[in-house]
Every structure is written in structure tokens, then in C-alpha cells.
Length: 327
Image 1 (tube, rainbow, N blue to C red):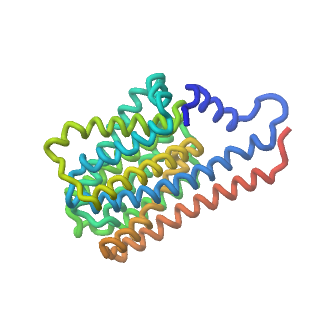
Image 2: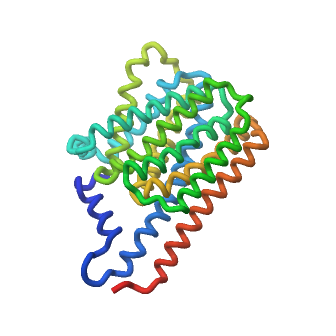
Image 3: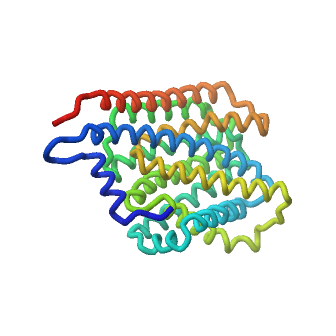
């Protein structure tokens, strides 16, 4: 898949979101933006489900391998896939992009999130780790209003704040957690919340493939100098997990980036909380982790906020589709 022209993505979004200023307004031009939001939510939900599987795989690997080694192999797999799909054109699109500085900054922010999150993963349960990490959507909603100038309505604020309350409840008294790993998880949340806003910003003019190729190439280059000191030989099982990690992470990244092309960051932020449910399932299935009662209570609030947002956005789209066309 090649990238669109530098202005085609933004122009298309403006045409779909605003319709025509003069003359009759096609009925589909009114309903399409809301339908796109629902599509974006569905894409992001699938992406976050894959990211939770990725997190479980990395938590398994960090007991034997250093985080930079894992990230290097994962990123190399994604780069090879992106080059296989886009070829030389994908590389040329990066060279033509006007967002090179933003891409580098975003890659640095995500690299920080990766290193903090997966270093903490070696010393925390998956559910508790993911719960603290979910301060990120609150940061994303705030930045989407300040940086992207998105209109964040009461429903989206309500969904994200309900999820944040769920995070606080699920975290409970932090006495059972080590301060160092907990702070790492919160630092990773700040990095990730910032990066999601940058995805939306860059996606206004650059394709998903361009973002994937640039980010993962920078990840691999950043980790490469550390490999002579940290590299450990891979057995067959670990090698298969790392390759699967690249495939899962690459597909999750693609779905999430596409979701941000369809829907505002403020609409997708609460959906990230759905990953906590997957974290519970993987944590129990793989490590027999049984979260505390307050973690279950917090997860219920998180899920309620996310489902309420999906229901409201879908209801609003149907209402606009049923409304008479404006002339």
C-alpha cells in the first residue's frame, strides 16, 4: 500500500467532515463522519487486543532476554513486512514527508514507553502493570484538545474519566507494589498518551505504512548499538515467539494507526482501557495471576466506560443517518 499525496488525507477528511458550504448538502456527507468514528473505534479495539497479546509475549521473554534485544527483533520483522508491502515507494514517501521531525520525536517517545513498560513487566503482574499504564488515555484526551484542537464532548470526557476512576480503583492501595516499577509504568503511560496524539497529527498527511516503517526502523537503529553487550542466543521456542511478536505487533500497529485515521484521538482514548480485560485473561492463563478484588472492580468500571462510548457513538451515527437531509 502506498502513501497518499501529502495533502490528500487531510483534504479528504475536511470534505467528509464539512460537506459543501453552498448548495445542497448530500445526506451521506452528514452521516459519514459518525460512521467513520464507529469504524475507527472497532479498528482500535482490535489493535489494542493484539497489543495485549504482545504485552503477554514480552512479559514471558523479559525473564530471559533484554528489552532492547526483544524490541530490535520485533521492529526488524515489522520493517521487513512494511518494505515487502510498500517497497521503494514506502521509503520515498518517508523522504517526501513534511513530518520527519514529528516522526523522530514520536519514535523516541514510544521507545521510552517500551523501555519503561517492559522493564517494569519483569517485576509486576500483567494486570497491575497494565492498569497503571492506563493513565495514558486521560493524557491523550487532554492533549487532543490542546494540540489537535479536537472538540471533546461531555460523553468522551465522561468515558475517559470513568475509565480513569477504574484505574484508580484497580490500582488500589499501592502498598503491594514496588515504587520503582509502578513509577516506570506511569512514565510509560505519559509517553504513550503523547504518542497517540502524534499518530493522529502525522496521519493527517502521511499514510499508516509510512508511520509504521519510519517508527520501527528508528526503533531498530536505536537498539542496534546495544546488541553486542546484551544479545543472548535464541532457542527455537523463543525465536518463534519473537517472530510472532513482530507479526502481532505489526498488525496491531496497523489497525490502531488506521483507527486514528478514521476517528479523533479523544474518541479512541477510552477504548484503550479494553486491553485491561485481555491482560486479566492472559495473566491468568499463562502465569495463573489472580488479580485482587479491587482490580476486578476497576476493570468493570473501565469496561462500562468503553462500552458506553461505543453505544453512544453508534446511536448518534444511526440518529444522523435517519435524520432528513439538509438542503
